[in-house]
Image 1 (spheres, rainbow, N blue to C red):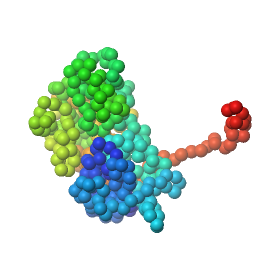
Image 2 (tube, rainbow, N blue to C red):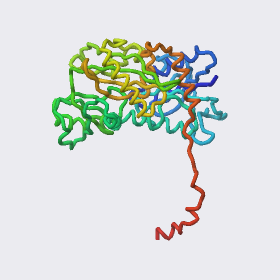
Image 3 (cartoon, one colour):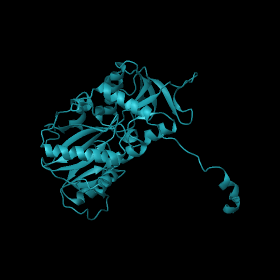
Image 4 (cartoon, helix red, strand yellow):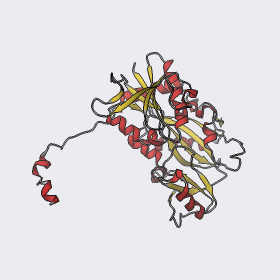
Length: 371
């Protein structure tokens, strides 16, 4: 059985909840015979450390745990995670489980580095992660498949007509959670928000805000076969700070002590069978078009009669383990299947066919071209 590096943390607004997901996975792996987990902590500043896989959340309150050992991630044919100092040693990791939410841990950046380092990893590919993080691009894929979706447009400070009336919901184009999402009454306010919000600095999308709609979520995994989980209806809190908003907020999702595991929910969701069938069919269609790899969570909006595809989360909080009650899949089995897929499906291999020097031989002097 393999040594499994569990990567968590990362330079992302979702750094804290990524730690919770990583610690949950690490602790489960310690109880799985044959698996040797290695805790790989990615700090907010981008540094790497090996930590005890049995660490607790409180150990990261001041940053890295005191016992953390610095690491360096190196790319190349002999790439991997290496200790630092006088005696440099490569960690004997066979595969890594990525538990980073948002930012470079979920947008394909980390996956690309792991490909360059020739490290097998569970979860989405570079392309799948990048598509999942880009709300505009993902929306285009959904509409191209003729799946039900609310209109979604790019938003900037100069946007004139988005094609639908307000009120509006404005979201970061690149983001993996509810952070930065705002409801506004008119387009003028939306345009102003696009130029002032730090969360929208890399781009924004705008959609019609439908206060009567509620969230429905479902898990989908690709190994050993494509399977769709039970459907949940997340429940919003009644906290004073969010009582005026009908958006499922970051606090609703994560601030409960165990990440998504402890979030309030109705599971399975009490919805008509016809609606459930539509969601399952949409999930399978999106999984095929998205190039599903690993375990994702699909988010929908519904009024109880109709459903609209909202977004995909390619590395969901707590790895969406709480969703797998029908069919019943234990956390042990979810992790084992993720690792088996990572080791069984070849990672990306880079080819140099065609780079045989013939183009360089036939090229005239570069110096003469610059003269």
